[in-house]
Image 1 (cartoon, rainbow, N blue to C red):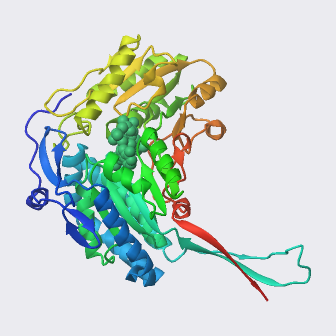
Image 2 (image 1 turned 90 degrees about the horizontal axis):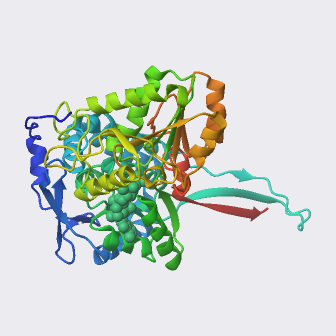
Length: 502
Ligand code: NAI
Ligand code: MG
């Protein structure tokens, strides 16, 4: 269902921000790209120009890494106490919360997602994550270790470990949750005492730039967080290959994740953490409560228009309930109100870009030409923006690209199964292992299935439940390491073992 009527304008302060000629944040200053180049930002709901940002490249990355190194080694940051560090991160969270409306509008206009969803989920989750990480700043502890040293009989020692910041961190983030991804990256890096060069996605730079102003307002010293807008192939690649970057944290495609690993290997073997693609299975067992499982399966794929690395894009339903579930999820899909994210009734906005719309339609068309059938959807949506209809595919085969590859759009393949053990094997038959879900009234069975699923996040009788305390990340080609939770601190610290002979 496509919403008609012009959506409301954003607030004047949001518009005033969009109207600025945005620059890069390097060493506490907002500066143009060294090349002078600019990059146009598009509103995906209209295809029209939204704003303009600097097109940073390797020269700007060089300056930003230099600033981050100085801030790490000799700037005030290394002398800021852990308590003060925590307070600054908490202050940033407070400032973000105070500007929730503005951030929700910017995110909606830039990314396409419903303003209401950004206000209810993206911004509050980012605030929460920052607060959670602010608390960790004072709690990053080492251990004391009893040691024996068999070849030094009689000697006595005092040994302890110390967890130190890994150093200058390059962070490269995608466009599907622009603010939230910035928070997931910055929160643990700041809590552990690292300094950062953040390369935001070329499609969606606006909220990270606004956050840059709040970072300054929160009193975080110059050079601790540097923000580069620009393309992945230039600015992103320069950051991944930079010999003075100690670690790179990346979220995006598996394809680029492999390039990041190569660049790290060919430069200075910087540490790498990766949060990559997925093709997550969502299994409805025969005893599931379908009144919860059907809307749950719809949310699993249609939330954020399917532009989620953990989207439940393979839906496995027992044959006895297959017809009912397919009908239910198709009805749900048809009822979704699609339109510009700023429309108050919008439930699904456009894809982030024309490229992404073409990609998603390309996958659908390949599936349809190979014999899959769209029970609903299967087309680009109405309107001048980059819309794609919520789509339910049936009659797929395991070898089809719609089953094997990440579509990153509102397209779910519903597949029947007969045997419970067999469905687990089919669910695990993927290069990815990011998320999975199982729906059942038998909680023991739910735990047993969860144990067998090769995925970093398993949901039982729910989907897309995120919290700052819950680690998130993937098995197999879905990535390396875990973000959020205290696991995230591991990504940003080095352990030092100190031994004193007494
Ligand atoms: P991408 O992986 O190319 O972009 C993600 C980030 O990496 C952006 O900031 C981009 O500028 C940067 N980047 C691109 N090439 C780079 C390079 N050579 N070196 C360093 N950084 C680089 O993803 P893209 O092209 O936007 O989307 C393609 C597909 O990737 C999507 O359809 C989806 O399947 C997947 N994807 C997965 C995401 C996730 O959350 N895991 C997020 C975004 C995309
Ligand atoms: Mg790309």
